[in-house]
Image 1: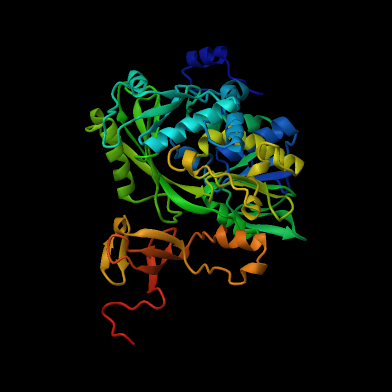
Image 2: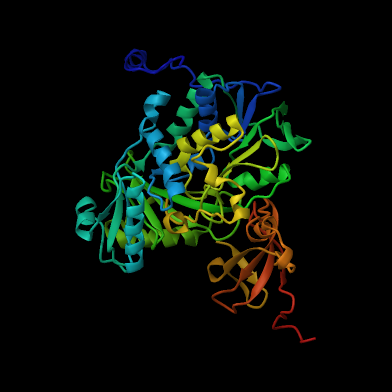
Amino acid sequence: MKNRYSLLDIVRHGLRHNAHWGRAWRSPEPRRAYDAVIVGAGGHGLATAYYLAREHGLRNVAVLEKGWLGGGNTARNTTIVRSNYLWDESTQLFEKSMQLWEGLSQALNYNVMFSQRGVMNLAHTLQEVRDTQRRINANRYNGVDAHWLTPAQIKALVPNINLQARYPVLGASFQPRGGVARHDAVAWGFARAADSLGVDIIENCPVTNIRLRDGAIEGVDTGKGFIATRKLGVVVAGHSSVLADMAGIRLPIESHPLQALVSEPLKPCIHTVIMSNTVHAYISQSDKGDLVIGAGIDQYLGYGQRGSYHSIEHTLQAIVEMFPSLSRVRMNRQWGGIVDVSPDASPIISRTPVKGLYFNCGWGTGGFKATPGSGWVFAHTIAHDEPHALNAPFSLDRFHTGHLIDEHGAAAVAH
Amino acid sequence: MLLIRCPWCGERAESEFSYGGEADIRRPTDTDHLSDAGWGDYLFMRRNPCGPLREQWVHAHGCRRWFTLVRDTQSYRVLDQDVVPGEARMDEEPA
């Protein structure tokens, strides 16, 4: 990698008042043709381009982005990383991602601030206790770290939690390898690494039309002219249906607003990630000190990157019930992202009926954790024109065969 | 929060309503001969447009009746609405 960052670099630039750092990636004008074009320069799209270049030697690649790099859901999530899903297919996909996370900062030569502080999923009802213990067993059979915490063990890890809330906490699953990562750094790290391998990242370049010839991809019309390609990978989250419509295919995707918010910065008070499906809330504390809080999706379809107030009110009621000591903390910022929800709460990483057109969508409320793994399997799918064993179960035709991967219980609310 | 006009109860807060998704999806009638692709299309595939959408709502914490809105999914503005066929508003004389 050109301009590899090192300790010596930091010292040298520090002595020059950090005024001479070069740009981390280029801003090229698009060429007229590429071997592969990725639509969407979020974490997943940039990871796809990076692994196409690094693992498959495909370097004549462009990533097209209608806005700016990492400005969509990559910038709008709550940065939680875990792999404790219920079904084998999901666990293996998310665990692949977890393994990539564990070496990601070194691989990208960029600190993505991956912090394995653990992820705790609370159980509030007897049924949830049974379901959680079943999921822990399933995780352990798949080689994923997970164990059961009693209320006393939860209290030892999270002293300020109120276990005797309206829905008493009866226990929790805990994945110590789970945690959080710095969302912007993930996009920037992948962008810089992909760029150094020759990938062109083209911002402010919306795709306006997809051109087909004889049922195959011919290229895309963009804000910067026509770009020819035989392989088109679409990773645009909430706008997946819009792009699918351009190519004349239908997706089982519905786009909903998902809101999140952060508080003013506090001294460290929450040392792990705490999630609750029953009361629809999850919380962690960033390295900067602000509490990062997520809500459930808004009920209606929407592309407006904003949601309704009662959704965040509902979430904060649950947070304050669980953490009474936070009742007077002020919230600093609130935002919405547009999530692409699939019927079984599992992603679609797949070929399509159009030759050379690939979709990676349906991550819904839980895509951030999968960023490296998603890019890794999608790059394989695009390069070989067939899915990797890890993402073969996540193909589009499962909605015709009926082989759904129903993760609503383990994944629908909290991420 | 959306302000939604129930055809029977007038304008109410969104939290009184439940969402019913895309409208006008008809259950296939010739089910004996429907292919797997046909079933999948009916059950799962959705238009999900960025723009005007005909969608179903029910006034769950009110009169509990269904109606249809045409709403812009980008601006969230309600453009048009109608009642489900066969239902009559309270202020209308029965035909």
